[in-house]
Length: 424
Image (cartoon, rainbow, N blue to C red; front, top):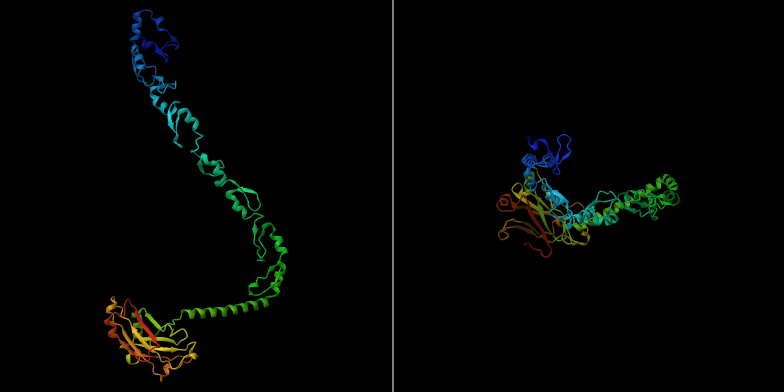
């Protein structure tokens, strides 16, 4: 006898179906005798979940036992939600779709049951959502109203001038053209700012000052009157500008003189810094009579005006062998009030720039002016060309022996001591 498994198929309900028209067949009526039933139970069949992917096939009598473990067979939900779920999908059901599952919200992190979580989703206050005004911002749902009222660039705000409402990101651009925005009069008439829409009428009705008012012109008038005044008053305006320029020039001269007075040394002592010593010495050796002159200084605030001069390659008896130093008396502002001839002790000090101050050996020379010498009489507008000093102040050989020149810099102090009248 042909095995039943080869003639009939078993449907999803466990019933045999006719191989011709697929209609259900009661096998008890087909094989009423026990022997036939035994043959059927021994026939080979496929699992009822064969289409779902189960590969099991065996005797019919073993089908029920297989279904107890078949991963494609549906069983009651383990969480007792009442649903019939295939075993293979049970874990996904318990984690994602079971209404009795427990899960945390991704935004507020609170725990809910499955059905409660589905209701909570879409209403969570901590969930980020896009602004309903389409400004592009993303804020938590609970803060949307505050964002719309205070921070949204698309919220409506009134123009403080005309009262019309504009979005926040356009109200500033509107202000630049708002008809009621106050603007200053371009004619600088001094009137308070007027609304932009009323500016034309203001310019017609209000007088404006002349463009040359800073030069002294007092004319005021309408735009048409100003244009006529400007054309007819060229000479007057030119005279005013010229007078203003003269006043400003005098003021500048006065300021320069005041600044110069503030910057003048009135201590009676000058520390002269000679930089680029090597280059200047080389120039002095190549050219005759190269003289370096110091900044001018005063013996006191209202005292004598002096200036030191230096010949690096020597002058007179010290030419080519020594460095020469002199003092000149320059015409000063207070010469008429001073005693002449000049009679104060003058000293020159060449500093030794040794790293140890205790071992420094400075060179000092001083003199008391001879009152008979013309160098110390009240100077004329043109000071003495040379002055008075020491042609052989220090030899070139001595300059090389100590640290008189360091980092290409030399320091000489010129000091006037009014308390001494003899050489020291």
